[in-house]
Amino acid sequence: MQGIVFDIKRFAIHDGPGIRTSIFFKGCPLSCWWCHNPESCAKGIQKLDFEFKGSSTIGWETSAEQLLFEVEKDRAFFDESNGGVTFTGGEPMMQANFLKETAELFKSKELHLTLDTTGYVAEQKFREVVGLMDLVLFDLKHMNEKSHFEFTGVSNKLIFRNLQYLVEEGKEIHIRYPMMPGLNDEESNLIEMMQFLQKNTDVKRIHLLPYHKIASGKYEKLGMKNRMIGIDEPSQARIELVKDYLEIGGFEVMVG
Ligand code: SF4
Image (cartoon, rainbow, N blue to C red; front, side, top):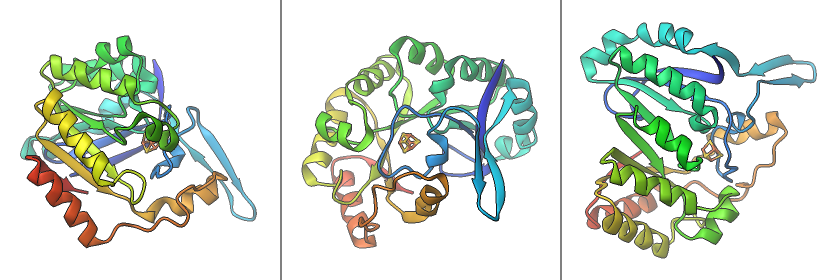
């Protein structure tokens, strides 16, 4: 089976425990205003032509065996640091069958597997694949359905149902909260998120991911509209305030 990925990052230290190799799957069902990887959104391989500057291709076809060959190069670092492999994107579950085949092969080689997911995945597919994962990094972008729809293009109802399933399965979960000034960092959203997690899960760790403008140049190259124009990165003081707020709520917070 062939799948499409658009990047492999070695020595990643923010995508799960230890030193990891992160594999970026192409395709995402969301269209978040703040997306740092807009090149991940479209499902297929993309060819970009630049006037006077030639062209470049985003994504390539690969197989589970080829990916295993790549990650095995880093095995010594995984063993040293209790690390492993992280599947990210885009939304890796957009290629659920390929992800499943890859995860089964990796699991048979005793690799620690982390899935970074939006949770916006058909429930049956989600259930088939998450059982292979040791850890799930699960995004919570906005608790209010209307705001979630506005900023990501989809409802959060399915996302909550899939999170509930992970809880019932006793899966280790870390929440990823992208902090977007003026969009989802208001007190009411933070309170709702904390109350929801306290009531429905035993999640302890939240990754707070502050907005940064690093990706703005990509939008121009891709000919995509950048909806974050005019929104500034949060100050260090504001990040600390939100971090403290979540910590007072009983969560262990990692920034970045
Ligand atoms: S879910 Fe992630 S990859 Fe998909 S559009 Fe949102 S930020 Fe980008």
